[in-house]
Image (tube, rainbow, N blue to C red; front, side, top):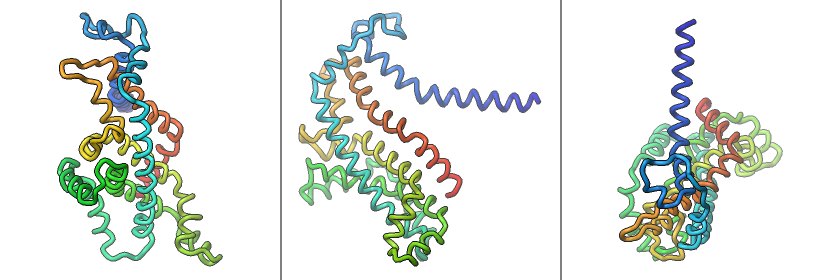
Length: 276
């Protein structure tokens, strides 16, 4: 009995540590965004703002075109997510359903391709975009994001497609559906949790990406949110409260998206892990 209690206690402590590690930075940034700069640098450190102020949020929108940056991020992340899901759906269906030779080798190559550090791919991607005359365009970010998101989206969808009985597709094709029609009308609706999971992962990856957004788009009108937030700092100043306010603005859309689809995302991750 004591051993069972100890195991449960350790699990509870571990869960609390994970929750604390995940939420504390966001809570601290939120509290910082509600403080004045004078209070932020004063000692001793105050955990809760003495006087709540929302002026930092006003300055975050007036000092830089934050709405423009958000619009660019939504557009780039949304397009890359859609194309990632389309391409990865075909790839995952081919791996899960067609009798491909060296199927395991293909899966291994997909996993290996996702392990390359982005910094090692920066120069080839930049040179490719420059050769195609795509620098400072939306396409310059969408294409690399699609390629970078394909491995994880494909792996998530493969596990779901494999869990769907083939008889359902065969019945649809007997009724006159093509294979693509069966994929669209039968497989994808049944694999909806996996599609949502892959979509959320692709969107968040594109939303948070900084290195390519900084390197491939030098135009002020094409800046995405991560790049735009770095512009609040000056040569000799670092306005943490305003930057924190901008960070909270950047966190909110993703947090809302995950909150809306949390059941599907959690279910997708769990089912994918069990069935994969």
